[in-house]
Amino acid sequence: MTHALDRSEQHQIIASLTEGVILVTPDHRIAWANAAALAMHGVDRLEDLGGSVDGYRDRFVLRYRNHHPLGLDRYPLERAATGEVFEDVYVDVTRAGGASPAESWTHRIRSLVTAGPGGRPESHVLIVQDVTAQFEAEMRFERTFAANPAPAVICRLADLRYVRLNEGFSELTGFDADAVIGRTLYEVDVLAGAERRELAIARLKEGRTIPQMEARLRGAGGGERAVIVAGQPIEIADDPCMLFTFADLEPRRAAETALRASEERFETAFRLAPVPMLVARRDGFGLLSLNQAFTAAFGHGPEALGRAPGDLGLWVDEGARAAFERDLLRTGRIAGAETCLRPREGGERDCLVSAETVTIAGEACVLCALQDITGRKRSERELIAAIDAVMADTSWFSRAVIERLAGLRQPGRGAPDARLDALTARERQVLGLICQGLSDAAIGKRLSLARNTVRNHVAALYRKLGLHRRSEAVIWGRERGFPAQGFEGGETPGPGRP
Image (cartoon, rainbow, N blue to C red):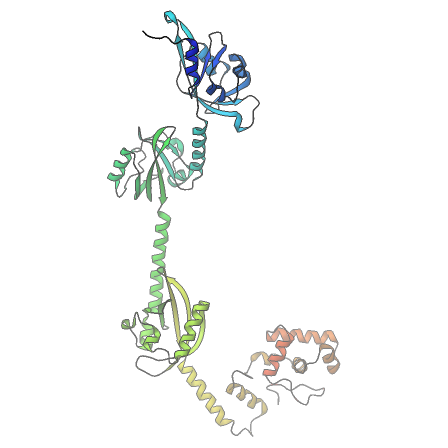
């Protein structure tokens, strides 16, 4: 014997459902709702739903998911009351006057009609599901997807049609949304020219991850770009999809081409440079490359590659070599260091050595250039020897000649300086008194000049000599023979003045 459920038992069963259930009568009254339906509207009592279709409209504002408002006669509750049966209507529900997110929900609604004895429609039922969390997650994904700078498109697996693309994809290909959405993967083939296309297609059909691979992506203008493409299975609105992401290889390839061209130009310039040059590893200073001028000057060729300059005995003074390498590692650059080097066949050569740390083919290196000054140093030594011989008997030389020869003999002190010749007699007087430690006022008194006039002479001195402070002027003048002895009102003697 079967047991027919009475209305009370039916309500108990329905009340326990997680889906919301609302019963509405043909005269538009809300007859009953379970606890789930009340919670989905943020209320606790049946009367808080409004009691009728009109009351419900007064208390809740509904919009379709495309944000279009529903007409008053299109509220799901209104449609259910008229006996209409529909499936999966998605609406945003907001409490009238509500402003907080807690007073807004997203509902998926369907309706059905229950029949009573004799098949007469008895109850019109609205079944509600709260899908707020699902749509909020999809909205977060949509925002993240749109903001992602990496080009991306989403393809629905059921029919292989595109359902989403972001701005990065449009910028990469020139396609806008209208040109892609709804088209199939074979119409806009993002796997064209993929190095493992068969694997990618097989994984796509299986809904599995597509590993990264190079491909040729055709743009709206018909051109192609080299890209890396990968696919990741995802779900969009419960539909299995494939998210394709891309990395543009063109900038990297252009950079690699430019780098190769730059390295080729460097190699040519290095090889043909008229001065001896070498490239060594920064770590350990093992030689990587020698140019033709270095081989011609020092005799070392390809057999020296891999060895350090210290192993070749290139430096005459090993202490100087160690100091040079230490300073180079510390500062990254050395310009014009004077040292003595030894060619392979023997002997010594005076050189100026300049070096700088550089990166070549991704490796930290040292680029070193040498200038042979052996001839110049020999000429200087011969000149100094001649001066020493001449100055052994200077009785017939004027003071000016003696001082100039002394300057040549000791280039670090009292060297001839064209700037000194540019000074007027008065400026020489002022410089001599500055070197004696006199102030501007004292100089003015000594020379019977106004203080401003003395300042003008001092400014002219600074400008002509390239100096900036009084102390610099004192050092500069004393190195060149100032102050002179025996000054008393007349012209102050100085270098070049008998």
